[in-house]
Length: 243
Image 1 (cartoon, rainbow, N blue to C red):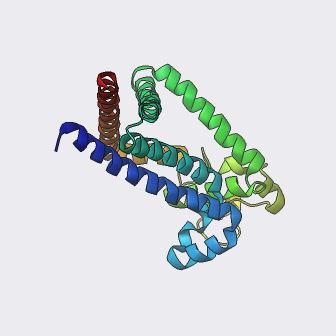
Image 2 (cartoon, helix red, strand yellow):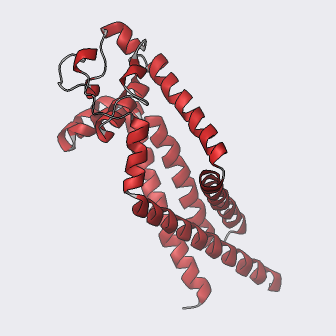
Image 3 (cartoon, rainbow, N blue to C red):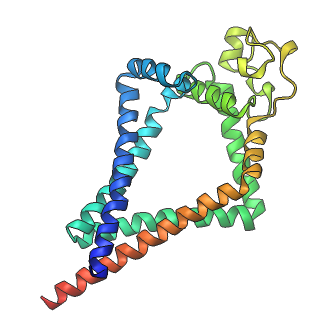
């Protein structure tokens, strides 16, 4: 088997997996938005703790659609030996790779810019609680799921929920912030719970090696995809030039 045929098969297999995974995520997202009730029942039998995540349908649709597009371009571009598809595939992967590297450089080298970025995240997160928690079902469900998963309360602490729609309607805080599962008032707030931002930073710190290994693995795969698609592109171009 020649090098070109090997790359062709590898591109097809690798992007086929991406395409199928993206189709599955896209299907779940569409199911969530079209028939969320049956999805809740389905999750209730498999994993009741995941039921709060049923309101992230649009995120699933966007992510699944992007993966389907990338997988389709990679598969068809390789099997059909289509230069246009391979080039579009190369550009998309390259843009993703550049965005990842840029983000890493900002975080590691430009702490001032990173702090500004974190400040924007803080403003957005606290604003989403103050204005949407208890009012917007999607945002409320996401915050419930995050607090339950990370064992945290609010972005900074429980005080983020004051004057939120949920607090104004119930005069209480989310149950994840309290020592008991009954009505959550300020007197039974769990003082040991950190804000979700601190909990997330602690999780990253505790799993630095794993996060680094995953990031490195993703970069290696992206570099492989970039190299393979470009080699195939020029091989096809060379063939057409000799015809």
